[in-house]
Amino acid sequence: MIDLRSDTVTKPTEKMRQASYNAEVGDDVYGEDPSVHKLEEKAAELLGKESALFVTSGTQGNQIAVLTHCSPGNEIILEENAHIYMYEGAAISAFAGVQPRTLKGHKGAMDPSEVQATIRPEDIHFPETGLICLENTHNKAGGAVLPFENMKGIYQIAKNHHVPVHLDGARLFNAAVSSGISVGEYAGYTDTVQICLSKGLGAPVGSIIAGSKSFIQQARKWRKRLGGGLRQVGVIAEPGYIALTEMVERLSEDHKHAEVLAEGLANMEGLKVENKVETNIVLINVEDTGHNAESFLTALQKEGVLAVPFGPNTVRFVTHYDVSGQDIDRVIKKVNDAVSSQLTS
Image 1 (cartoon, one colour):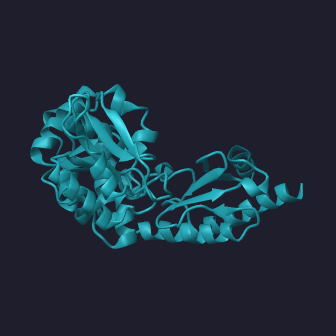
Image 2: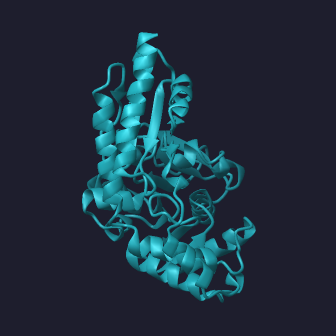
């Protein structure tokens, strides 16, 4: 089975497994795990922030950021298909007690002038704007890279209004490899940033939040409140360190595989590639094959390929470390078989 559902399905490398086995550990709730210290220091250095915090997942990292930045009754501005809004179980409302204010973006990027117009003025009738959230790369937009100037413009508007900016950078390293702009440069136009170690970078679990020392100090308490305080966590921090230091440049292979896949699918009758492939995500519309997303995925699974629905007629494929160029060639053939079978039936 060739699994293209997500880059979250990657398995840890042999080096990661050995590093986990040999990890020097301590109780991280007491601040005594040296492997976690090493990981957090490296992440802060790469992101250009004062401090960093290891958390269990990207969703936990985003939620801790919202909880730390905001007070109940605040409003946060984010793009209408942002992961924080779409795929995190309404946690910003359930936990932080904040109200989302969504804006329609272009390939995941909000218009800075619309962001400025959406920041609430002082009025007894209005919630206070507590946070602006960005996402780079943007999952729902097909792994689109948020333009650097767009991020810079929104950050400057936010500073003028004394509103913090948080970046959901679950796939920020994909953006950096694609654009040639470092993760530190991107993070320079944010107050806080979350990155995932467990997607394209291949670690088995974990994410990082980075920001100022005072922010991370408060975030650490929120992590504890959410049950995210861990003990001998060096056994998963060491694979995360390898992810940050050895698995970044190879992301270009995933991007190339996605381009090859998109080109192969675009040439098939009945399929339309919906996104400009910039990183490791390919979105295809299957409506003209006579399938919807669910029936298409069932047909694909019979051919030995896994993907996920991304709309009534849209299917998402995500390339990653465990998928080779030969696998991509096989997927193209298997998709063609599934499409041809449907069109001739």
